Length: 239
Image (tube, rainbow, N blue to C red; front, top):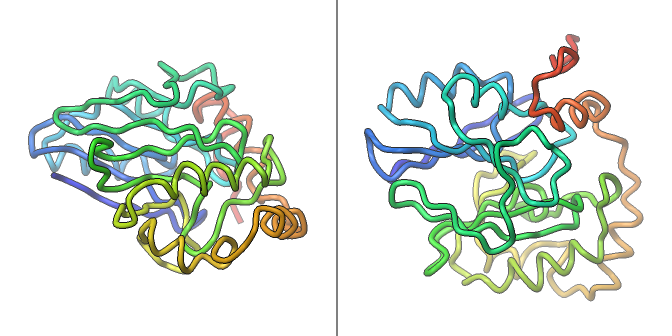
């Protein structure tokens, strides 16, 4: 299997490339607009054909490359069924299995960070990894104070859905701000300071009192991402 974890330093975003073999079909999860040339170059170098480009949710801190990738590679663009981004080729439903040249990803509805967030489980019959977007991070969780976020739904998505995966399932988040690249479900159960030993009420109180500033890119990124990153106003401001 081909697996690459790519990083955008401006937004601390991880993008994931998966393919079963050289010369085969591939998919990308959470691509960033500014790295379009990096993705297409890597795909060409590995002799892959991009079939799907997926966003786990409508991002507020960077502009997606979904639309640009569709134009460049004729791939299908995907988001969850509750997404308001009508520009995507197709919306996936909870429990749906995506199959790409021997790779299987199960779509898992995990709201809380936003009301339309999805995670994707690799090899769902015997889970190997889960791509959680922003709902569950390494030793943290995604904020719940905009875009329909809700701390109670975040708790439910994490504790009653993601934490039911096997403990040895590798966790790949949508972001990390300290340079950590991966964790596991078992690690986050034991060591995530927002969750380990906490009640749902304690978690909700904590999330409701984070008082975080709005993401710097939100006013640009959200409307751009609802159009798959292709409006004229989409470029990142300089400085």
